[in-house]
Length: 276
Image (cartoon, rainbow, N blue to C red; front, side, top):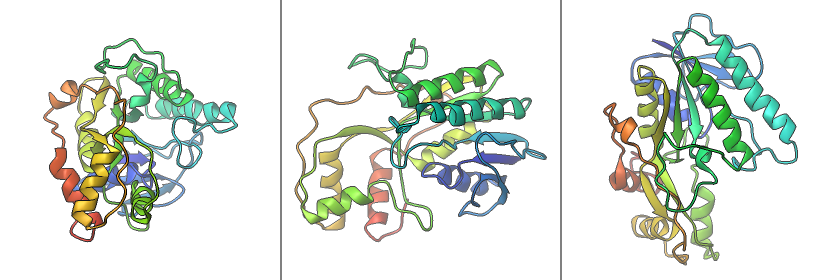
């Protein structure tokens, strides 16, 4: 299969690009730069006509935002954020019509729900962040034409060549002894997410949750300290934890996450061993 992928050089897209190639498919990377893993590169930007000729399927992982921010990624230009991301994505759906399409959505579509809620795909949603609203609107338009969306949690894993991993700044601050605020989030390994994406190319239409670990910053840094041999000041555990995503629908396709074993293997790789 020849699969077009937008956002192939991003933090998450690089995992999807690597998986497409490892699974024996042809990768067509749509974007400003070629994928670090290879494949064919076709120059493209969100909102421009998509060069999809000869492609059998589309995975859309590109998204424009203020660097380092997703919620709040509109910065001081919400109108431009909406135009580029939502209008550009809706155009892409029209151009990809008739092909299997997977959209990389976000757990941000669940923003605004009460603490303690189990996040299932059937909930009524009204996200309170513009990021979540754009993701949900793009999802709904895609589902109407038979596509699938992956509501992804935070994604970790080894970086692509020339990139830094998502915890680089955090680990450096820990090593310096900087005081760090409590935090807790949900995470999934990028390789596990990428496997989910390929499963969705042949799945029934609609949204699928993708998450694995509930990870407190205190516990993450304690693991890192033990594995890397780096002492530091551990933050307090977070008083609140995020709502947990129910991944039963995705698991029914045969998907399994990596759990704590994948986390420890990745941390060992970051510390100088072989990455997961």
